[in-house]
Image (cartoon, rainbow, N blue to C red):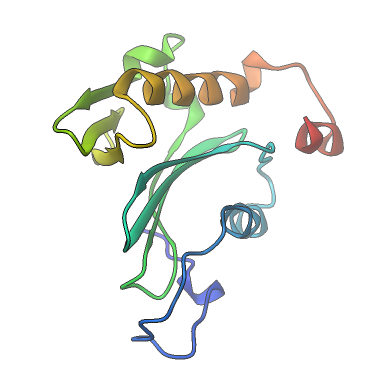
Length: 154
């Protein structure tokens, strides 16, 4: 698992006053670590939110990333990533989301580790649909050829 916590340093490793890293900063760091990938505005979905952890799905033109920002850690880390080329033409079939209780549900993507999602943010169907739309819109065959500047402003 690739960590990029070194890019989000705090005053000490056990600094309990660390705050969550902002969405745009997480995307910016992914861009800097993956210069060959394009990240559209709105390419991210916060799927899980507690007082101690945020979990994000972020989609580039090449990969889907699962990012965990746990306040007990030094900073956000990449839990897993999957190339978009591994998704079938029926992206919805590659994503399984289910409600488990009143607070959260579970979402699975291909063979990657299942993650919790907050039902206060999305229902299972809403999250599955939103993620499928982001993946379909980012897959190279699903979009016209754009320059990097055009792609990042869409």
